[in-house]
Image (cartoon, rainbow, N blue to C red):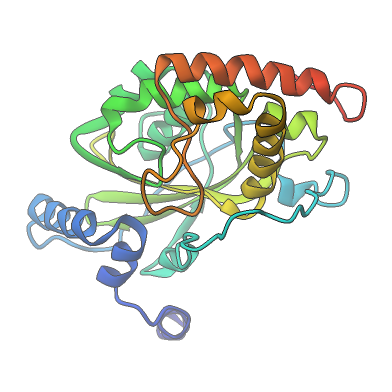
Length: 291
């Protein structure tokens, strides 16, 4: 039986573990991760059991559980090329044995899931200090708006200004020696999606590497499919109503990316808040509820 499962996993995932990690974190970070896991475990790499009883981060089901009732995201034609979408991320899960578990309620006990739960709750509370406190000193992040954990204050400011909320349901855990890799799909929405009455957007995920109660590495596999539609709608409105402010809010042509990233200076975040509120008000008569 175990041999059949391993054979199916190998057929479904032809890449090696090293290649999977390079796809997720990039070559430099994946090499650091593998070296750190090797040093930490000194030859004790083995798949072991994890026992967790659980309920979810949010009691509200994800979009996959409410597919029959949740509003569908409208497909708007993006105005920018979407090269570089984070392909291959989902395939990394099936390396080795996996155990399906969900985030626990407070008081059940410490463990990797509590760390992941704490990060998502702090992110929804726009609490940068708590987010930073959950990371190890030599941690690495990828797929975020900033390159390091020390800059999460800017992420929290932007997400608060635009009304960002995350929902996650069940996570999947894969032991890696004494570390645990957690794959947590999530839905998101913000004030723009609410103003456009689009409902939640699915297809993204967090992947954590947790050891000793701290996040060693985090990859945010944020799906541009869905976001680009909302981004283009908001940016088109901004260019039409406040063309002189676009350069102060969007870092146009800063580097090769599927979309120009938002500026995250304090002044820019003030503008994001002001014009998000104006965007919501301008759509109040033609869409669903706003923040």
